[in-house]
Image 1 (cartoon, rainbow, N blue to C red):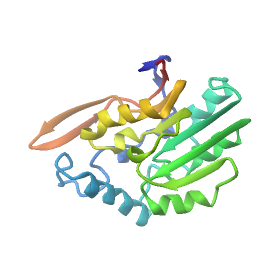
Image 2 (image 1 turned 30 degrees about the vertical axis):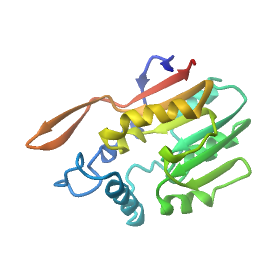
Image 3 (image 1 turned 90 degrees about the vertical axis):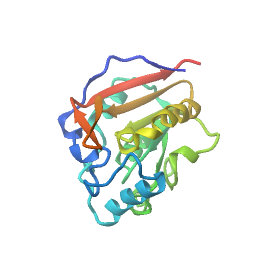
Image 4 (image 1 turned 180 degrees about the horizontal axis):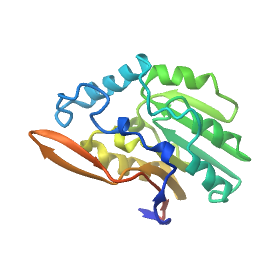
Length: 203
C-alpha cells in the first residue's frame, strides 16, 4: 500500500511547463487516447532527437533538494528516477551523503547525454519503467513522469511503484492535479497548479 504522508504543497514555479501535458509534444490533431504505447513512446524519442526539450530545467528539482536538506530521507539509501531525461536529479541524489541513484529513460538520446555525468553512485539505463525487474529502492522520484504517460497507463504506474519501493520507502512526485474531459472527440487537459507530494509505502 502507498499512503500519502505529506500535505501536498506548491512546487517552485520553474517546474511548471505546459509542454509536459499528455498530447502536447506532437501533432495536436493526433488522437492520443487511441494511440498505441509504442507509437506514443516513439513520439517522445523524437522530441529528444530533435532537441525539443522545453521541460529540461537544467538543474535538479528544487523541491526534491529541499526535502533532502530537511532530512526527509536520512543519510543512506538507493533511489530510482524514471523518465530521468538528462539526469539532473540522479546526479544530485548520488552526491548527497551516502545515497546512490539509478536513472531510467526510454530515450537513447537522453541517456546518452545523462551517461556523461555517471559516477560510481549515479548510473543510467535505457529502458522501460514498466519492465523493471525485482530490484527495490528506498526512494523513487517522479518528476512529471506520470503526466508523460497515457491515461490508460496510470493504474500500471501505481502498481509498478508499489512493487519497486521498499517497505517504509517513499515516492516523491511533482504532479499536476488534472481534470480530463473530452471535447470534440479530443482529450483536453486542464492545469490547476503543480504540486509536490510525498507518499510512503506502509505494507
